[in-house]
Length: 361
Image (cartoon, rainbow, N blue to C red; front, side, top):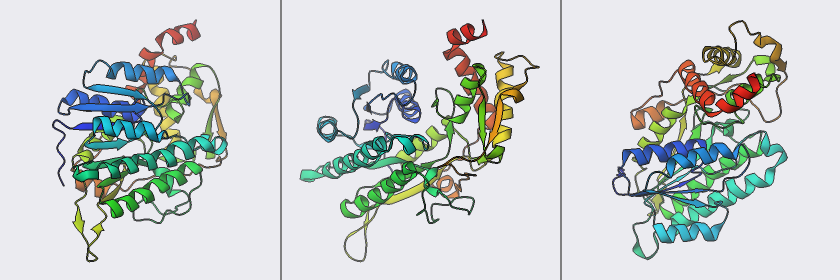
């Protein structure tokens, strides 16, 4: 089912986040939409200054409305739906991070479970009194749901009942809740299992960002499973192009043999479908750090590398089978890891220029 973006109100949760802010900027630049209503609680899980920097870029657009709130606040969500009556909802708000979920589980239940429930409930009631309501709910899942799955590449048809972190469990719960609401209330929903998204203005808890921070501060970087890991790195621009295309193509509504809705529900992997070895990733990152002048050509990076065992909640390989999504939206990510990391390092150099000068002096 085609969904036009023209003159539509898009509700975007997690608007100050990495993917959220990038998507908001793309929608606002395209200038088709009527408004982007952005929600974010600006928590301090990572450097708030990056979130503020992202928001500052968005606030120059007069079609952008920002609400500082957490999606676990049901009254706030209901008020936003009543006031702005969104046509399309993109739920990217969530407490992220596998490792953080081990020590701070409450944050995941509040945002990822209660918050997601509030969003789907508001979508459900958007149809009250004969209103057209939400045309498409797109929400973020995660490659983490594959857990201990040994079969690669990962397919959305694989059984994913063995999560190895609470974060993964909450994301699988989102998929189940979305399916139930699609069936019960005929809400078109599309879930996207993101695979290691990276790029400029990304999340500092991700390896490429934290490694850069530590190397510049002459700290050890821990390379888990002794470097025998592979990750399906996906560049942010490829993610955003895919998201915009997905938003405009909702699952079809139709009745089943029982006279009830066949759930208008889709679930896709969204990744590069090209897993990279962790040691190769580190080597490319270090080459780019040298290229921009953050390190000398003869700098010995090996002294700051520490090979360590696998940690709790982590997996050896992530590898997305993305054929279904590519066929559905006629797009395949193309950005190489080298080009993606180059863009990140250049952004990092400019964003932290003052701090870098202090360190180097």
